[in-house]
Length: 579
Ligand code: SF4
Image 1 (cartoon, helix red, strand yellow):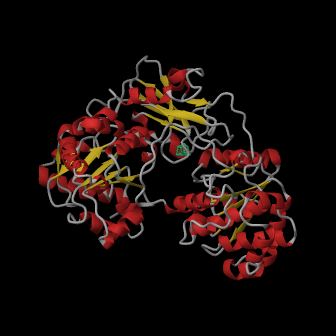
Image 2 (cartoon, helix red, strand yellow; image 1 turned 180 degrees about the vertical axis):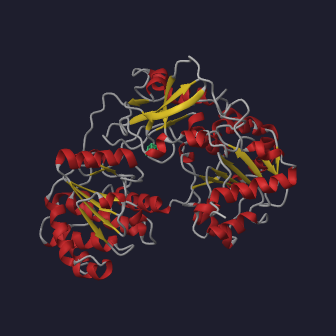
Image 3 (cartoon, protein in one colour; image 1 turned 90 degrees about the vertical axis):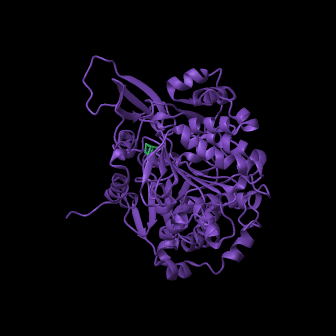
């Protein structure tokens, strides 16, 4: 017998049990909807191209979907998008496989056996949302809105209408799924510079130092960043040096790959800073004026962090560390990348801060070819309470019994698979005393979905609306639109549609806050508040082009000179009181 894959397991576990319990009636929950025939007859219908935004990773590339005979036939890059400039990764091109996957969830389901047993009943959206609103309404009336826990997976955290609903509901505990390398990076950079994620201006760099990132294969800024690195190397002669425990795609294409012991990048960064200071090659003006530690104080602090000490920890020869420190300090400008090799360890936050310290020492913050502060468009995204920093923290609180949700909504999130100690997460989610009501909203059946009380079939990113902004690689803010390239399959719905309906059911001020006839109308109204967009083609232009780049904005560097850094001291905080 061939090896069974995770997908096979889920399918057999789900449909097998469903067949036992329901006489096979639920197999259609996975099949393409009847109105979407598998084989389309070729007709003379002219293909139509619709601009939108990819949501398969945080990079948010601009895409063009080609639709022929009512079916999406191709996804290509949008050349007008300033970050990805018409290029996509293989995953972006393959988005059709998400849309037309025969295993997609297409109908709302309700658990009919024990939790996790795999027995389901197909229900209507009306039944599903009535059950959910019956749970949410009393929590709100009793002032217990923090008993609604919402875990958001990729893209969910940027769904504007959903965020507005959560804000209007009032104080639910909202947290992201388990991507702790990114969280470490975000926290380390925020503590130091007051903002994140910093953007590598690699196209203008002459030296690209990479601590454990793999942008040729995957990264928060993936395709946009990979393009700029290649430009920097081809047009600017930039040298790429990678510290990594393994020969990643990026390491393999670097001029130098230097293997390190896992989790020891911080020791190397400190030793490099030590050597640069010792040689008097630091950017003294930046350190004195824009950080809260003087070069003398820093040298004193870094005294024990010698290259020899780093060699013992990291396995990288002290002479190599000294050589690369000099190259980094002298080949101006230099940008420094970080990735999972930094953030994916217990010391991830502090290692990120060690790399930020090295940036401060060479003074490459917000300069051409350096590490730039992010420029994004203000879309009026509501600020939400963050009771937990992440899913693992929420589950650790649950495990200790310090708090518990009355309703747990996992939206495109799969903690039963993605969290560390996933087996324990499964046991917690199975326990109805600890999680009385579990709703899972997803495009596919996941390990978490298999434990749900109610399963909601979500529209994919190719079937839904949103406005999105990402840190501009070229420092001019932009907004991109996500709009349906095709109608949702089966009975799947976008989260925006779900919360519009829930708002109406919950009534009162929540109904008022959700008083939009549909998601498109909401997007139209939000876009009307974006300064300059009306004169730049308005929402119709945005729908046509897929993206609008702020006009009259000249990319400029050293933005901190106007208002300082958004930290408590207004400076880069090498020493942080918030730690
Ligand atoms: S890099 Fe990310 S956003 Fe861009 S096409 Fe690939 S998956 Fe989509």
